[in-house]
Image (cartoon, rainbow, N blue to C red; front, top):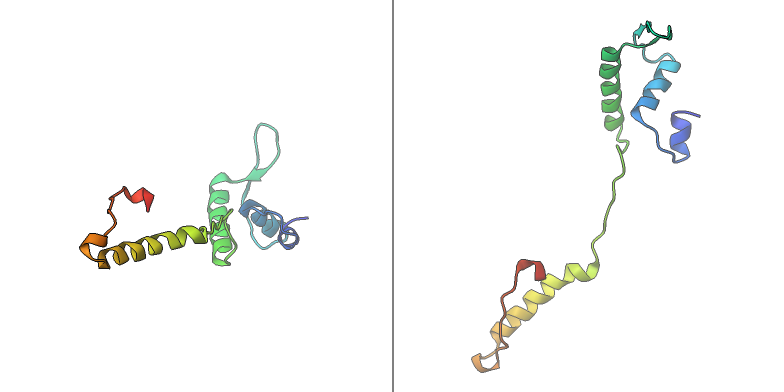
Amino acid sequence: MLGFERIALGRRVTARQVLDYFVEHGRLVVPIVPDDNEGVPSFDPIALKAVLQNVQHLVVWARYSSGPHHNIQPNPINILKPHQFLRQFLANRAFLECEHKREVILDKSYL
């Protein structure tokens, strides 16, 4: 099971597997170089690199995600804290001089 069947099942598919799928179904032709050591033919490394890069561009162009994208949502309480601080800070400044609470300046990491 390769290619689009794996995508439909939600399994990870690499650009190399997409390349192999295209070669297997005759959509791409990559030059083959015979291997001297074992006699097993393999793809020309320079051509393979160029074709794989083009397949990677195709996958990105087709808007498939290229890896895990962790969408970390901030805690809503932490979003409200700076707004609450500014509201209280400005409300404190609006008081009369004798009713002011002490203002302590802290590092930005405390906000």
